[in-house]
Length: 349
Image 1 (cartoon, rainbow, N blue to C red):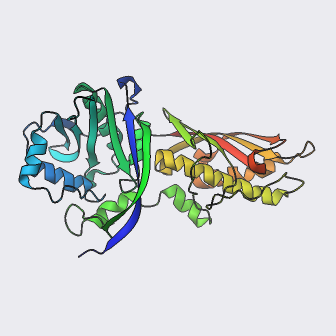
Image 2: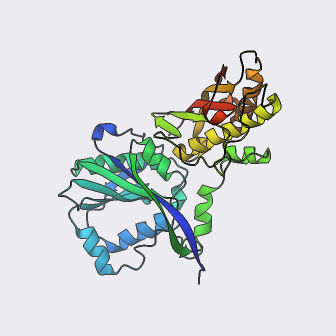
Image 3: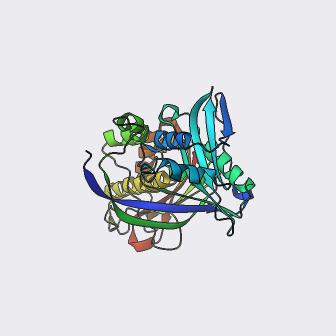
């Protein structure tokens, strides 16, 4: 029997309120076919649920009876759509439009079977789920995801144009390992969430991508529009929320300390970037960096300070990390921090 553990789970609810807000992802290479399962089948429903969700703690329906599955799948406003590759089920989504009075359609479940992960199905699958939801019809399409889901889930929803309208964290009791499609299968299926190549390279250099935390005002750490992500200005913030290396460079802070501040700042930027896109291996180019140094009018080594951040990006992303850049002096920066950096990044779907 699996040991029970208590964990904090953050859940995000996202919505789309107009079909025009969809940012579609192209169909991936392969012989993929999307078909609706029009005949209610508890056997098929449970198979898809356990196969796609067994690695992500989809456990709510495991105790359902045949009658419960049949009642759910027989409702005229509940639809199951399956992606096949050469006749083999590869992914699926379930839409729940039972809240017809409000005009809501929920993407109740959306998942890829383990053998078909890393085939770039997720973006296209979500695109088709949103399109079908609007056609049911709907006045709003919504979904929820959480920290127990696949690593790229939240980023995928945001990339398609969905917006977070609610976020909450609660402590829940779970088995210490997900059930898997069948007992013992979860470990292999969860290889998809291993550390990215970018993070692995940084770890070997002694760097760790920072948790971006929560902004202190009415803004977000990064915003994606199309294939570009605009990362807000970040400072040298530690994991405990404290800003360090404060003061004017060349007066209160020496250049080497400012370079350490720039390294911490860029790791914080990458943390916010990861929060939006899910996997830093999706980065195709660091496009532009704006480095700001808190200094007096006689300081001239702005570039030397910001070079520390640029060096980390090239170490992490190789040639894709080489970027256009400005390094400028500021008479002051928020909280008296010595360095602030913002950047623009190109990512793939």
